Length: 533
Image (cartoon, rainbow, N blue to C red; front, side, top):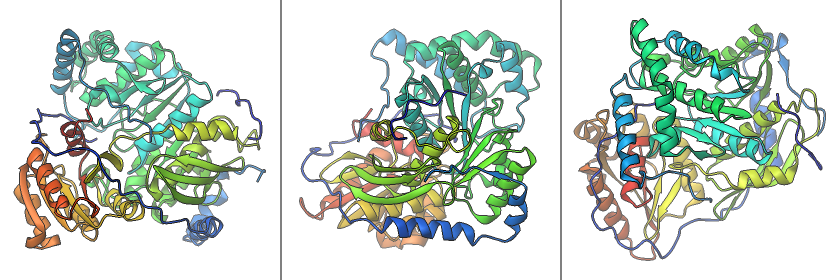
């Protein structure tokens, strides 16, 4: 584990088809719609969180009796989404790699084991053991939390590698070094470096390595080659049998668990938690976001079994206060080593504030705070780090007049979080939704979460072969919204144009807006069409 820094006080399957050019959408200027609603009493909010945790099912007391809890004794940036390579030769080579990866099993076709990835790591010389790591699982908030962890570690002058999925626009986003996606050239090189070893494993295993397994091998090898001081790794799906789970992370992070991928992970939060708890390794530190009681029981039981140390949101750390600010929010975070006041986070929504608390606790734990040390991290470094955080496609404003917001919510819990944040941050007089979801998702739950805030909804689909049929989705939307509030545009460019036209009917200064949501792929393609690629 790294030394404590100086202190003064302190998948989805993402195969993408070609997107058509969008029709003319007007000028991207004029008014914004960010509101300033004021803050709730921070101390009361923290007390509420503590109360919610301490009123849990009494059966948890039995589990906690055998666990160690971690308690310290003392009290918008531009999103880094790469475009296609400008050099035609590099672009051609990248497309060849993308095609070879796409020829493998996609991220939604799984054989639940780590046998193949373990074989790949073996022939590569176990690159994943060349650096310490922070492993992140959960249902929602994993990528944003990973980006915050990465920013904090980088601010303390550690060289980082970050592996996240799915990507918003470019496959190269998945592997980052020093806080930025690797170049197309380096991505190609990483693939070519491990390709002979991939073919060796393919030849001896019953099934070839999947897309995600090869990507994971590329990331771990690239991190060892860099080399990095620490890797921040987001699981692809689940935990126990996820391809990333060949690392022995000293810090395991579990973001909020909800129902998603129920056909693979289980139909209850307890079953899903059991799968995700597989990333908790012996003697690790576990950072738990607030969880449903049944999920918390499973996670704490696993911590007891492997003698892991636990820190829980609402008890050992949390959000002490938050208030809306221009371009984001101003936070007071209660960490494992003390309080961090006046932390500006350029992301919207209460859920992002809680992600920030989780990320801070994870980095504190990585540096031994709460166990070996009782003092906080340097407050100015923490502030500087959080102020640089971006998370593309997460309540991201990409156009003005009317304001167009992108959010990659792809399950009901994510949709509820986005809907709540929209109401808190933006003063829309009329909000039009553009919704395209992936097949197999809880589309009804997503639509129901957004129904209270959408005046109308434009139903569409993205170019992925996994997109839900637009007529099926429209039928659900009519049941949820009523026929008069639903418009169907099978092509995403037409859907964007229709939604913007509807929003503009409010008049130039009336505050109409558009929210594009339902899938990371839908959001990524919309981002390209709106000129952010």
